[in-house]
Length: 222
Image (cartoon, rainbow, N blue to C red; front, side, top):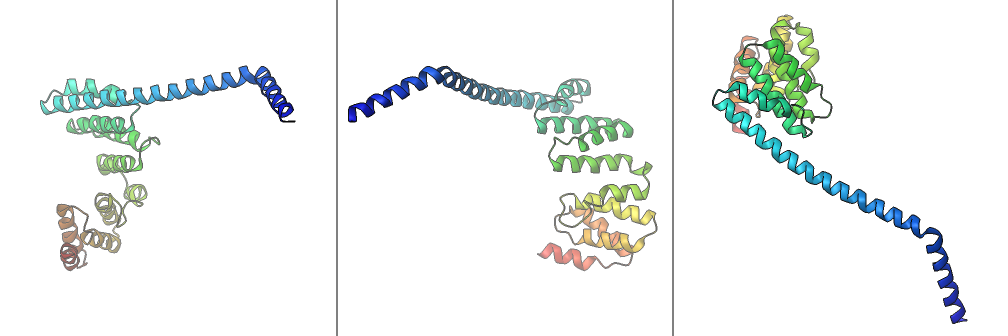
C-alpha cells in the first residue's frame, strides 16, 4: 500500500507540473521582474533626490552671490521635480525672488500654485496660502482674508501667529473691534508665537481694551 501511495503522489506531481509548470514558472518570472523593477525604481529615486539636492544647493549658492539668473536656471527644473520637498522648496524660492522684485502678483500666483498642489504635504500648502495672502493682502477684501485663513487662525495651529494677525487686522477693517481684540489677546498668550509678533499682539490688544500683558508674561514663565 505504501508503494502504491508513493506512486500515486508521483503521478499527481508529474501531472501537475506537466499541466501547470509553464504557468507557475511564468508567474515566478513576472514576480521577480516586478521586484527587480521596484528595486531599480527605488535606486533611481534616491539618485534623483541626491541630484535635486545638489542642484537646489547650487541655486542657493548662486543667490548668495546675487547671481539671480543662474539661480533661476537651476530652480526651473526643480519646480517640476518628482520629489515633493524639492519641488516645494524650489517653488517657494522662485516666489521669493519675485517678491524681491516687487512682483506681488507673480509671487502670489506662485504661492497659489503651491497651495493648490494636492500632492504636497499640508504644512507646505498652509505656508504657501499664508504667503499668498501676505502678497495679496492690500488687494483683498477683509471677508476674503477671514474666509481664507480662519481655519489656521486658531491657537495650537502651526501658523496661528501669522494667520491670526492677518485675520485680526481684517476684523479691524470690518470695524469688529471685539473680535480683533480677542484674537490679538490669544496671540499674545500663545507661547509658540515669535516674540516680535507677540509684542505687536500685546500692543494691539491693549489699544482694543484687552489686557494681554499679564497673559503674555504668564506664558513666558510657563
